[in-house]
Amino acid sequence: MTPAAGCGRAEPVTNDGVRAMAVPMTRMAQGPGPGQARRLLAPVGALAGVGAAFALVALVDPNHPGHYPVCPLYGFTGIYCPGCGGLRCAHAVASGHLGTALHDNAMAVVGFAAFAAFWVYWVLRARKGLPTAVRLAPKWWWAIGVAAAVFTVVRNLPFGAFIAP
Image 1 (tube, rainbow, N blue to C red):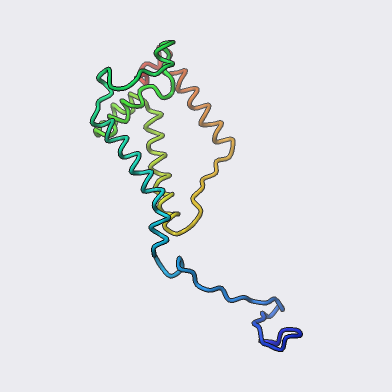
Image 2 (cartoon, rainbow, N blue to C red; image 1 turned 180 degrees about the vertical axis):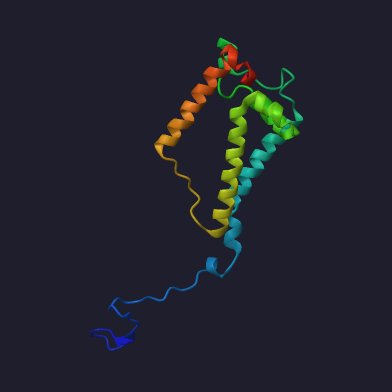
């Protein structure tokens, strides 16, 4: 410790002359507290919303006409969009029929798995008080768009009937 210039009191100084500062422990560093519950509200709320949607689709079977509206693109053109079969897929996932879900909309199954992985990441980061934003480079957004376009084209061609709903 050396006296600070001009004030006559001692301050911590490292070997290279740079002042060191004491950093107080925060509540987060001491362990879980009321702030942690607040940080987990968003991911728990999102899971509750998704769970409620899956529960509705599990209870009200989209394979029976009249419960849900018809896809506008399919209704007007007869072409399956990337989302066509998504409700039937969600019903199959909620019922534990993964093979049927993959047939109804394989892209939605991938989306459900991606959401589950992101949700776990979100909870773990929020629990620790770390930033939870996921930034994808533009090349990944382009890749997702191209995959959706290829999926849409293939499922509407005769050889892609195995992935059509």
